[in-house]
Length: 150
Image 1 (cartoon, helix red, strand yellow):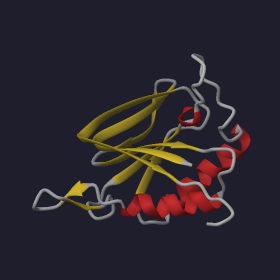
Image 2 (spheres, helix red, strand yellow):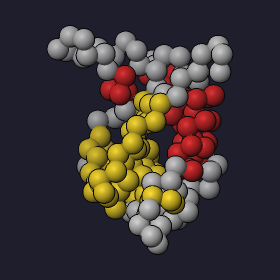
Image 3 (cartoon, one colour):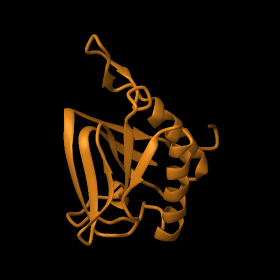
């Protein structure tokens, strides 16, 4: 599971001319699932995302989380995070199948809401236009893969 996290002043996602999710201060997060991802990875990353301290405190240090500032999350499903680019034309065979990824995305959204953070979303499988103002800029990638030892 991969998250591309951007600290934003504002962000929105539009589908067919309509805004489906919109936030002010918070995190715009592209969410991708690989073939081996499960609820276990989603649980871990939902907790991690809510606690990630990338907002400035009074001393201008990145010491506050999205929860601490009363910010919001805009979660946007993005299967292309699992693009295999050995050849010039990307393939997406490492991405989780759409039917399973849709369910896992919905599960991840609910797990993020359980962290007491307001969540807006894009629409899985739709062609989306994402607009954002990156604050910093701050962009962080989180990945979590479990193997038999974890």
